[in-house]
Amino acid sequence: MSGCKLDPLFEAGDSRVVVPKDVIGELPECFEETVLGSPRMSSRQLRCYHGYHVREYDSVYEVHRDRFDPRVRPFSHLMFDTSLLRALIALLVAGRLWRRRRR
Image 1 (cartoon, one colour):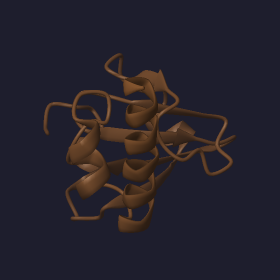
Image 2: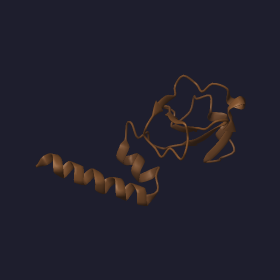
Image 3: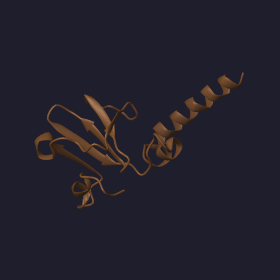
Image 4: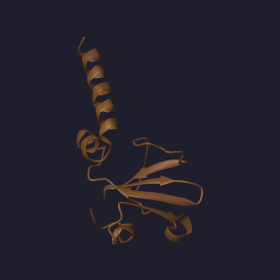
């Protein structure tokens, strides 16, 4: 996970940073809007292929890194990048939906 304009934000080893929009300016072109993730009152969420997940608020971006992109590896993302409880609930729901489709 490297090569993104946001890499320097994580040099101190932080797992999540909140950055004023005027410090970053525009997000790099690698970011795409997504519905995947918990919005937590944000106006929108964005992801990039470098592993970053951004929640956009009025004056700040909240940024964290995911090990697995849920658009590419959803089950790995659930197991390693989300809380265990949410992952278990998501797997149970996915299992029920899968069983219903097979009927």
